[in-house]
Structure formats: C-alpha cells, structure tokens
Image (cartoon, rainbow, N blue to C red; front, side, top):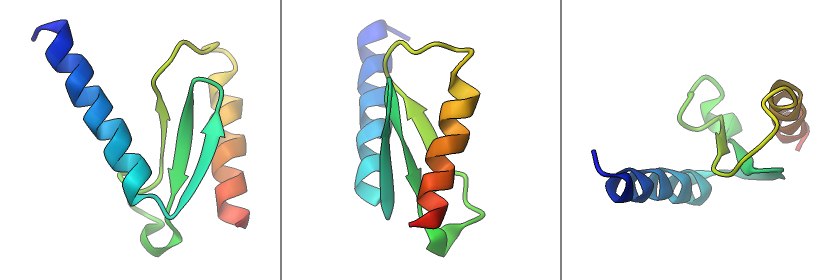
Length: 72
C-alpha cells in the first residue's frame, strides 16, 4: 500500500475517533477518547498516537489519559 494511502486511512481513522468521542484528552503526540455509554468498546475508548512520542512513556500517558476520561 502506498504511503499516501496509508496516511489518508490513518487521518480518517483519527478524525473519526475525534468526532465520535464523548470525551477527548489531548496527549503528547496524539489523544485519548472515551465514551462511558460504550465502556467496553475498544473503538470508543482508545488512545491514538499520530506523531512521534517516547515509547517508554506511552503506557503511563495512556493510563493517565483514560483515567482522566473516567473521572469526567
């Protein structure tokens, strides 16, 4: 798959997640989305990273972001 097509797909999925989110938390390199109405849905509760980020710090960032979403 050409890079340009992959970039378009990733951009679409990122934008779709943002539009569907009940709660959105910005993260370094991306964002987290959460929807308590669909608490068991991976599609509605996810972390999207679309820029370079420290891979060692990512698990803590994701846990913190989704924890913030859970308390909202």
